[in-house]
Image (cartoon, helix red, strand yellow):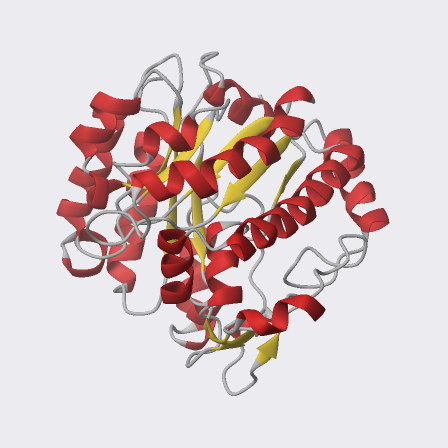
Length: 349
């Protein structure tokens, strides 16, 4: 079974051969760790990095929002800045910090951009076709921060919260503008052949969400459901992502046909995730990056992955796992995590 078919089976509880595992290495890592040591780990873990061949020098490619000392104006007019190459920055200037600019404000063209960088739809279509010819799963998705965070970037977080509390009429117009842009992208991805569409954005803080459940239901959830609908109607797998504590929002997030939910393990609680979501939707578990993998021991890391697989996994499926490596994690811990992910990927096989 190839990785695409195995992933599809995991999502739809159709007995995958292994738990899909992704170990993502952030681009900033290539400037932080010895490149040879990092590549050696990749070669030694072929399940996570199939077919990887080391090269003499890795030259990481940074997105425009990940370049230190290079402020970037995105297609929405938001100015991004970062302090570290490879780490996504934050918006420091909001194009609609004052509503007086709204009358002349125009959205990006979905024919030319995904809202963050330029896009060539013919190339997207060709890539989807090539993936399908390999019998893999054609995956696409909106930019991270497609709706709620996009509104924050355009208006500023505090302004947006006051807009919601004050029932600002311009906010309804802005939400519609963002939604129509997102819908145009979704329809283009479907036309290009997407079988899986992701809707990633962060809604949670360390404790609780960034937006109240009432405001979420009033302003954000309806838009979510409308931009999800075309993907569901086309038979695509719908994947939602949010960092942070989203326990108060998760029922509303998955309402409307979401099949896969990517959420953080320790912030939300493994036992809570098991009781709330296991067996109901596929859990795409975001493995801890704040505590155990950063400050723990290899044995603690192994125990964490085993606990998560035991509590959230079943032979039928319903579990995938992902880890993002960032500078600061000891390489011995990265190695322990890679070994644990490979070891427990077949725990139920």
